[in-house]
Image 1 (cartoon, one colour):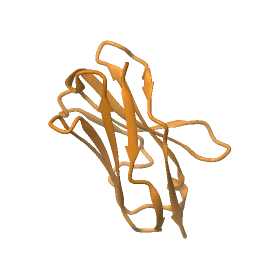
Image 2 (cartoon, rainbow, N blue to C red):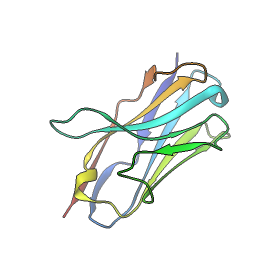
Image 3 (tube, rainbow, N blue to C red):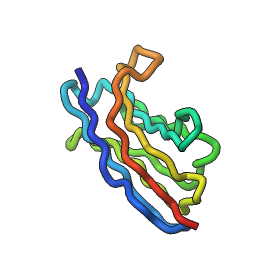
Image 4 (cartoon, rainbow, N blue to C red):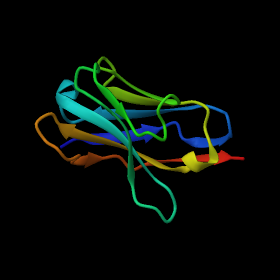
Length: 119
């Protein structure tokens, strides 16, 4: 079983930055593909960014490309989401997720952290 704990959310003005962190435990971190998702009020949860087990392959939603950066630190068993040039439409609960490399769906989820961007 994998436990994921997010931190780093908060309130920020448009144009500002935040860095989210997600600490993983319960499994060997290096075998986990990690992802970030978000869910805004009244909307479905959507994919934001993903990073491979090696950290060499990263994918982003079109809406965040060029503004958000996903990274991972194997020594700390932590994945990060650096969010720059934030917009009010980035306001959402952000979730960290993990899956085994051979799986296609994310099986493990954190509790979420609120990000609010004011205009």
